[in-house]
Amino acid sequence: MKTILYLAHLNPLTNAHIEIINQLKQDADIVKVMPVIFKLGDKEVTSKSFPFNFEVRKNMIESVFGDSILITDDYTFEAPFKKYLPPLLSLKSWKLRKKILKGVKGEYSSYTGDKAEGYMLKLYRLKPKVGERRSLSAASVKEKMYDTVLGKKSDWKVDVPEVVGKIIEKNWNVVERYSKLEDNTKRVLGMKFPLEGYSE
Image (cartoon, rainbow, N blue to C red; front, top):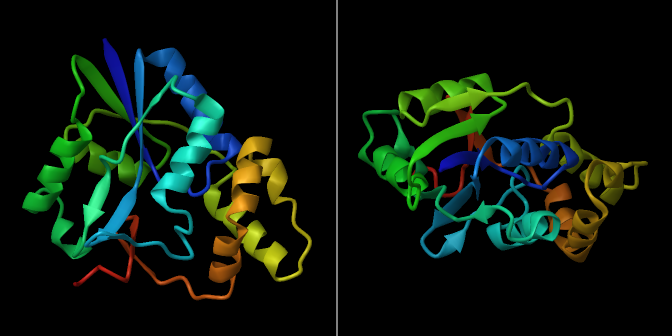
């Protein structure tokens, strides 16, 4: 039995993510999708870069794939996030790797469209396959959504499935809130972390 691990923000789920997951489903018996989560105590930390919480993103994924893939919260960073650094030397980072592989039996590999992330996955022996980066990104979709709130013309709905668009509209208050805020994130070794919880 072969499992492919897909660790991604999926914030929001876009047509590009769906293409990737459909391809992974053809290449493996099980696709384990893990939307990244940042937690400060019992609270999930969201930001302009990561507006939708895990439950909303899980709902997006399930609305498209149902139970044909496995969706888990195993890719969770617990504050203080800086404790996961430096890579390889941090005990917390190895505990995270163990959690990512929870329930995985037999052959496995991981997937990413990012070369820097692929290097990190390789360091942690997660056997990455680095795919071609899609031109459509969740970041560009978010920017289009924020533009809509600010009264600019935007076609963000064409970049997500209709059912995901409805979930976004149901949570439009989240988009409205973050459209007016600064992006309080910090990029370290190619990965973004929220500032809230980074050093606590």
